[in-house]
Length: 219
Image 1: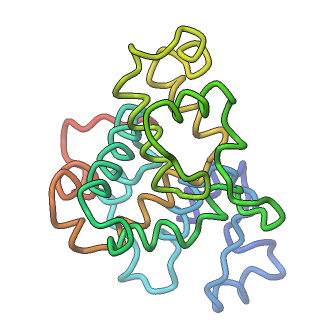
Image 2: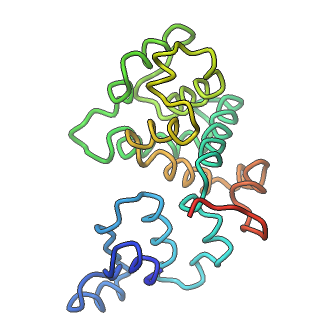
């Protein structure tokens, strides 16, 4: 974890400067202010956990979202949305967890910004959504549903909206990742905290199984 942080941050230590480092290590208080990528930050926190037994194995590190290709990121968010649609909206354990950090997801952690995702997407995107069904702008579940539906029905979108969202998986994903950088990792953490979901496929084998030989990664 320290080495990983050192490489990504261009030489900084995850527990701060030399004069404060020992105290931060003892307290289990890492400083990830130099890490802008939310997936990298989450992975490093796991790798430098105070209890060595709780740190991920090397295969588990490689299966973390930080190393996923764009196609896998989009598929994961769509699979989560699909399962949320099949469960009772309020009673779903993942839904409860997912909505609890909505300020981190929908307002990028800024408490002064109202968690309202429709204000962060283009008007053409929001208007097109409203033609087919109702979406709640303060719901992380509905943001996931909007992404899933527009990706699944991309070819049916107006040409101007296709250009806005991008016609490749990387462009499409970037449209949302730029606006909601914590969406993927907070969704991953929500599923990670729910053993019932983790035991079931596709989550068990595709997203939370240890990376095996032949897997391909983004990095």
